[in-house]
Image 1 (spheres, rainbow, N blue to C red):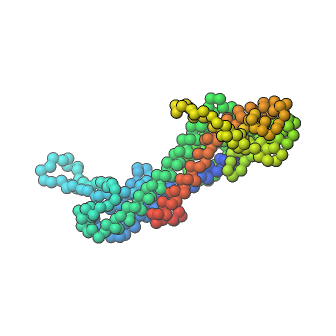
Image 2 (cartoon, rainbow, N blue to C red; image 1 turned 90 degrees about the vertical axis):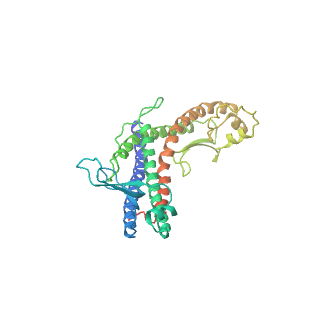
Image 3 (cartoon, rainbow, N blue to C red; image 1 turned 135 degrees about the vertical axis):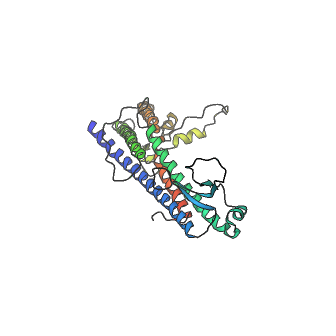
Length: 338
C-alpha cells in the first residue's frame, strides 16, 4: 500500500510540477521579450530624428543587461559659471534626466520641442511605452505571487500530515530566476501532500463501495475539466446526487440572521444529508450504516479544500497574467516572438 501511495502521489505531483514549471518558463520568456521590446522602442524613437530635450529613455539597473522600464524624460543640464566654488575634479557640465508624468501636452511641445505638430507622435510613443511597462509589471507581479504562495505553503502547517518522501524532478534546461527555482522546490512538497491526500480520498470512496449499505448508492471521486483537482460524487442507480442537499436547504424557510453574524460555512454540494436520504426513501437501517462514511467523507473534504484553495490560484495566476501581457505587448506594436 505504501508503494502504491508513493507512486500515485509522485506521478500526480510530477504532472503539477511540470505544469507550474512550464508556466514560469513562459512568463520569464515573455518578460524577456518585453524588455527587448523596450530597447527596440527606444531605437525606433531615435530613428525618427526628433531633436529635443524631451525623449524616451530606457532604465537599466546596475548589473543587468536589459531594461526594466521605459519612460518619457526631459534631458536637463547645467554648466559651471565663473566664480562658482566647486572642486577642480568636477566636470564643467552636469547632465541628468527628469522623468515626466502623464501624457504629453501641447504646452510641453511648445517649451521643450518647439513644434506642436509633433504632439501626436509623442502621444503614440507614450501609449506604446506605457503598454510595455504595464506588460512587464503584470508578469513580475504574477511571478512574485506564485513564488510567495508556493514558499508560504512549502512546509506542512499545523494539523497537516507528513509528506511522502520523494525527490523532486530535475529542472528542464531553462534560464529561470533563482527565486523561481526555489519556488518550484517549495511547490513540490506542497504537491506531494495534496496528491497523497487525494489518494486517501480515492480510498474513502473505495471503502464505502466495498460495503453493501444500500444497493445502488455509490460514492466516487472524479476529476473533470471543471474540477481539475477532483471532487466526491454520490450516485444512485447511476444518477448523480450532487447539489440535491443544497437545493433542499434553499427551499427551507430560515429566519433572518443579524448582520454581524459570521458568514455561513461553505457547503459541499456532494453532501448526503439525512433529509436527502429520507427524500430518496432510504431505510433507517441503511441511513445509520451510511452516516459514518458520510461524516468521514466530509472531514476529508474539508481538509482537501485547504489544498484546493492554494492550488487554484497557484495555477490560474500565470495564464491570466500571460494573456494580459500578450495583449499589452500587441497593443504596443510588438509580436510575442522577435
